[in-house]
Length: 65
Image (cartoon, rainbow, N blue to C red; front, side, top):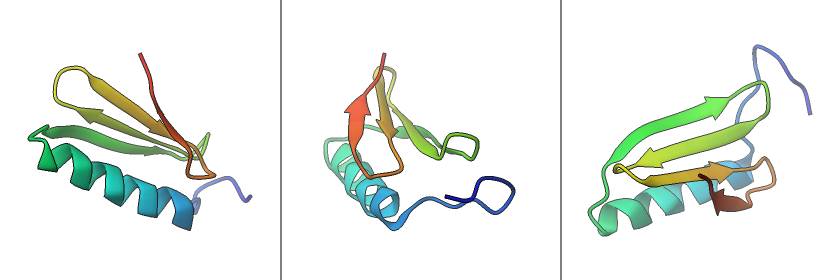
């Protein structure tokens, strides 16, 4: 994996991110922040006031605290 200025999310991350965002909005959770951390190649989703989700470079996701 190339790290640096041109780092992009992996295709797995992209598909999982779209699916999770669709699920969240289906259940009326607003997406407050969607952030791709180029240093660690991780996507963070902050939804509503409580939900925080992390999507790793391999497409696996989890709730974080």
